Amino acid sequence: MSSAGSPPTPSAQGPLVERFTKGDAIGVDVAGIERELAALWRQSAQGTVPHPTASAQGPLPVMRACSWNLVVYAESVGALERARALAELVVDAIPSRALIIHHERDAVGGSELDAYVSARCKLLPGGGKMLCTEEITLESRRTGVEFLPSLTRALLVPDIPTAVLCVGVPAESVLLEELVGVADRVVFDSHGVEVESTRHLGAKAIDLAWLRIARWQLAVANSTQVIPPKFTVTAPAEFGAEARWMAAWLRARTKAEVNVSTGPLSLGERVWGEGAALFLSDAEILTAALSPRVLTPAWEQARVAMEWTPGHGTSASWNDFAARFAKAANAAIAERGVFTCALTGGSAVKMYPLLAKEKLDWSRIELYLSDERLVPLESPDSNYRAAREALPMAKLHPVRVALNPEAAAADYARQLPDQLDLIHLGMGPDGHVASLFPEHALLSEKTKRVAAVTDSPKPPLQRVTFTLPTFRSAREVWFLVVGESKRAAAHEARFDAASKLPAALVHRAARSATWFLDL
Image (tube, rainbow, N blue to C red):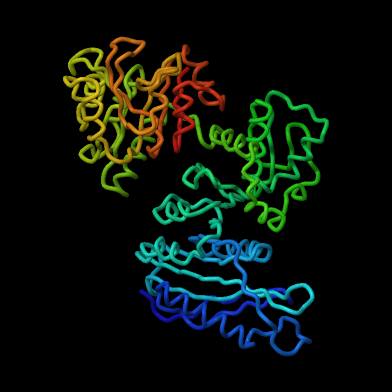
């Protein structure tokens, strides 16, 4: 799995820090890496670690310390450099075994997987001892990523907490899912990055951009500025993530309508002349990111508020509906060979004939129904009939309506793929979506992907419907809402973080939500 190569070039350090690298790339197996680390520490104990001050002579006693596992994940070279710099700040304050994971997706040449071991040492106060910590670098290319999850788990020091540090917000992947699964804390930095969702990083994730605004939050809290019902938070482009978090925090605390824009640092009419000085430095926030008290109620409120900002629940023009559908379908077919989409019923069906005008490979498109009434398929009340008439060329999977509700739901769940690319949803004036109605018990369903409805408040009584787990797993959810009577429910679903409307629950659960509105 590995070939010899040059070790990473050590970064320049201050006068009281000496970092050295041991040997060339080694065969990547856990026992081999641990042997290299043991040899490294034997070397240190024999006095080959140089004294970090130019005037001193002779070796110093070495202390080996580790209170955290720090797993640093980066894909691009730029992200790797930034990640190493952040990791060094953490390790200087909190002794840790650092695992630097660098995966090059498109690398050409080189071995599939390489490993390097190194140490980071600093002189303790008083000058009598050196404190050293370990660093293991794992570099994977192409299919070498397959070995990283198990290798990472095996290299973690047992019985101490594990933190995963990401620069930016990496895309969902099997490797990232594994790393998040073993982590006691996930730390990421959305500074300078456009982020659509961080849900795949889990509930234990904290954004450094959020911690960076603490001084600004305090300044706003201590000011006499009156918060208007609608205003804009403005910040330089590089602090866009911090501005979004400030807006989310204010939105959660004041219930105001808060937008975000680029420009001089300001909040409404108040210009904050201090500028970047209001943002805390990396050194000031990194150790706080590992504190058990960092996941505060304010953070949770801001994260919820962030989920329904324009970056998550965007509005789109009906004029773009067909083109956006075609773009999503063609991208899925190019990547996975098939596009899977669940259609809705109701008034939005009238938009489906527009899709017939797009250039699409319908043989690779699989269509489903997000809910269905248990009536004959030829009935005017059948969602299948409405979709079939609108898209006669499509491969549409019907519900077996002749079965009893429970059997029909279970049968349709078996037909669904593990993850749908896209789900279309209409919405009623009461905020119901599919056949999930306000205050219905199925809103609490945690496991079934398709459930039976036997007590629908609207006729017919018997139906089958997708549940929140299905909406949560889909790559995208599009709300297709037509009619002035739905204006109030649409506004509540999108902008009230405490709303219990079915549309609001789906909106907050969705990985990516887009609203096509004609109100």
